[in-house]
Length: 142
Image (tube, rainbow, N blue to C red; front, side, top):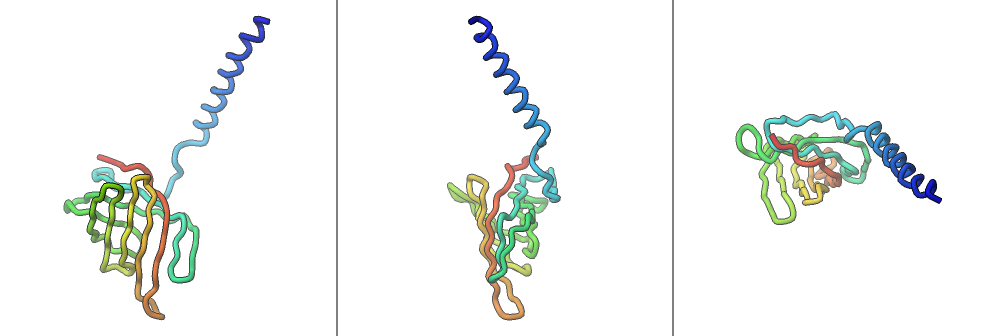
């Protein structure tokens, strides 16, 4: 009977070691192909889905959102958007508004690091609405 009592802790140690090994071998977050400037606080974000008009895709396109950059202002490095950005803080979210680029719009970054983007661009057939959702990695601070 005492052999069974000592077997349980040994099996538990083996299971924990296997789970730790799996976690180590799978690595950390995937390489998103985008790197932010480590001297300024920023999030690296990735679209889960993106729609431009009636065309939608689920390509993993990443971009950088800076809370503050060299000039002291926020900055959005998102494809098609101007880097000149205004930011407003709320209790439960940050809102970044950009205009002057190919796409003008508002990026809302929630506390759980999920985001929504609503924007528009002028296309060949008039105004094209842009909608996106996704998530961001934890804030990188200098």
